[in-house]
Image (cartoon, rainbow, N blue to C red; front, side, top):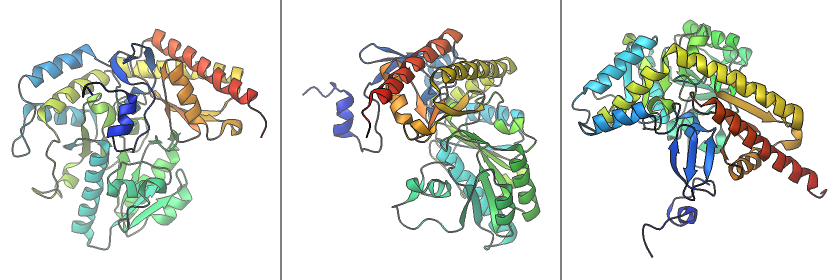
Length: 411
């Protein structure tokens, strides 16, 4: 057998089965179009799970990749490098933050944030202040600590005892939050829009209540902006469209447009608690990833690009409303910018995967956010023609599922 001859079936033979990938194998991409190994084209409405915010093979990112790739890829944490310092300065100029820590993923950025919060509480208040408050249906990563803090037990069960001091509350429930946040709370971690949990935006009053409760009890407020950050909502970070500023912000996904990089951003006062040797990473902040991320940040922080996200959002919602008039399958369409969730009606409850599968058959790469929600996270600069072509393909996919449902024999 030729070792180079691989197919979708090869996945089932050689990979640990934690994923169930689509039947086609993507091969190359340009802008918002992807071609599979058979040469078939797809419109990309998933963006690699809100990652390729500037689409595939962006010429300016390719230029940086080649230039930095010919200079220095990696040097290790015994040294610094110019790209990471420029990236830190740029992110700090755009946000509340004074300090940055770079990692390779959103989970690692959250791990750093949670460890920093516990360290701050330990050094300022002693060993009894260690409780971390998060919310049901939240998602903060797959390391053991972050998956335990996340509010979806299906991801954390079956791995032994979870870390102590974790409290899960209903999202958007102000009374529950005020009741639970107290003297033992060291941090509250919240997504401004729950992504994996169903694309559920936070009520502005809820975020204000969290900020007030944290201030009252000397706890830190952490915003997990792994999915909402870097332009996704039409603002560079989602917190900037609220009147709440966190103490720590985590960011990843779109930050490298597909090159693995994440960051934890915070203030001088809090960063001082992470002294030399207290936390670390081998690859985090490497020059290649940092150079690419700097170009991503420069491009996406442009106010004109962010305005384009908001106008595309309006277009997308308008067409989804028309599709719903025709098919009546969405109970609610929600979200912000180009992070949109369309929740299915009772008649199609639990069937998001069927729509995603049908979309693939009609040349559209789609996402779900739980079993009941179709999630849209296309490139922030998706061409208008591609947006409308993708929605036309979605209409065909919906038609396929709805027809099959109508034709199905009664049970």
